Amino acid sequence: MEREGAVTFNLKELMEERHGDNFALHAQYLNPQLTKVVTTLGFDRFYERGEGCYLFDDEGNRYLDMLSGFGVFALGRSHPVIKDALRQALDADLPGMVQMDCALLPGLLAEQLIARSPKQIERLFFCNSGAEAVEAAIKFARASTGRRRILYHAHAYHGLTMGALAVNGSADFREGFGPLLADTTEIPFGDLEVLVRELKRGDVAAFIVEPIQGKGVYELDAERWRELEDAVHGAGALFICDEVQTGLGRTGAFYAFEHFGLAPDIITISKALSGGYVPVGAMLTSDKILRGTYSSMDRAMVHSTTFKNNPMAMVAGLATLSVFDDEHIVEHAAAMGIVWRVRLEELASRHEFLHVVRGRGQMIGIEFGRPTSRGARRRWRLVEATRTAMFTQTLVVPLFHRYRILTQVAADNINVIKLLPPLIAADAEIDLFISALDELLSEAERSGASLVEFGVTMTKGMLRRSPTSKRAAARS
Image (cartoon, rainbow, N blue to C red; front, top):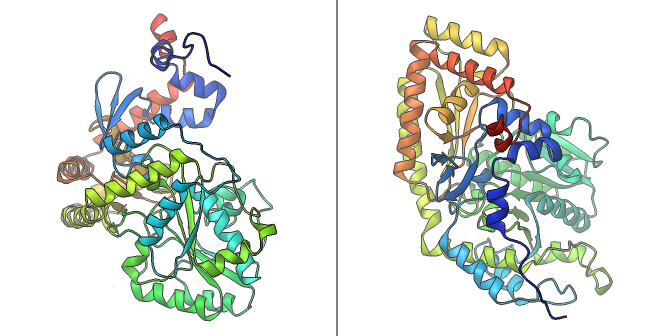
């Protein structure tokens, strides 16, 4: 059918007309509790654009983004190569998702990813997210082994869909959603004895792990990882590495498991593969394991998802890998990881609140703990008495308000700031963060000024937790 008539949609006009309605719309139609959280913390800004490692609000203020969309923006925001690739794809009018077809672009991206993977990885399945990749991993592991039970680590995070939630090591995420997927068992982090005991029951299909845990940036040494993997393989089970956050250069290697010399049977990836624009995930595995699910022509579609080979996602992935090669992103992340470690450990040597620095590459966990001097210890007790791990929030809030640096507490009830900057972050960004944290810790050791600032911010936020639109507020 021939398309006629004037253009009826103008994005720029729509956004200008409704500018400032963000929080009122979310409070009314989306998640009102998230609106309350962001408003209470005073994080309610009207961002207008992003570029590289920075966000810009409607008043022209620049914010250093140390979350990068929880690792999505590995190449920073608005990378010109990704944008150009997506424009090319739109202009090409690609015949996407024909379904009864074998399109070129998924094959090309699969070829690229498998070339960057260990030799046992021969095939993959594309999906839309990290959680979907984990769901696929669970299904394929069960089909391949003929067993049902999946083991996972305490404090693990593998996504929030029902199967992924069943291997989530946080009770807070699981509460209220049961009964979950049956036949899953939690293993204390790195506990070889418990793992071996569970494997001896002979019903374990797979053990799913994060090479570095996202919630808290917790690590194991290479020897313990190899002991765990050997035990799994010795029991005839599969070893699944969830690289959704740690993969694609985040830790200074293309996959984090490379640091430990591991050979997983299944790998899950997502986040960074999107280039920051188009949701995409993938489960990578061996030919044998994949054929355990796709075992005949009748079962060619037994596991699928409508958008699995979306051409825009495939182009975003191909362009992302091209930039990784051209700009040496993985090598840069490794180099910056050394800088982070040196700078933060120097801070730790001078500040009694800063106890431990963890992580690799541009995935950093900074753990805070009880100081030794009398005045600082008194302030620590005062803050922690209000809520466990509240001290870290007293740093995250002024980092944002005073220094315009966006960070997060790594998980509920732990005093850890987690940093996931874009992988392109360099010395300038590290300097900004280190300088700000140095000042805040010095202040916390001298006085309670930052605690007062935090309290004032929270009070103001609670007083305006019923958001109106910016336009309505202006009228009033």
